[in-house]
Image (cartoon, rainbow, N blue to C red; front, side):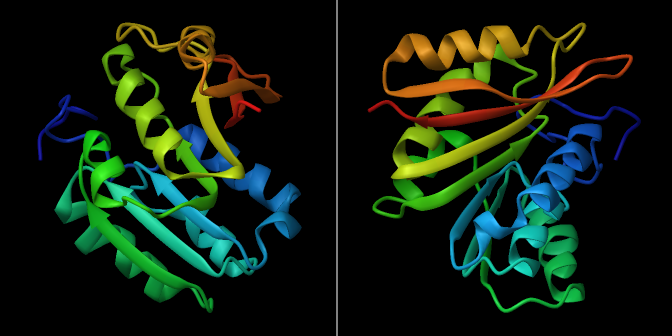
Length: 191
């Protein structure tokens, strides 16, 4: 691998643990009782630390998705094996555009994702992946930097994109103050 953190639509940074992944893990720790007995999908999982944490806190089923097969094989699944839990775990490499068809008919109580909104070109496929796989009463939590300098994505742009589609509703669930401010976003189906 080269020195770049990502190569868009080739290697999306799955072997790196990103800042907002830790934010999402902290959020899960603060709300751990929510996940007991539930199903969880993590989009762009990489190390899968958030979904592993939900499994440790009693999630019944966890599906970890990442763009790169090598990430799933050598990072994601070994991390699940190293952490004791009783969840049924699946990991699969696929693009977000493939999620609605490859997971057709599967619905999840929770969808998790961190550091995935940096590229505005991916907003539609992320929206469609969530809309296709979230239960009617489900919740998605996305952890993100407020702005992604140099690549174009941002929390305000993502929230507006999601809300403008009229299928899901996105809002800020938690503010993390830092030199580069970060957020946890909550996404639900529109009633």
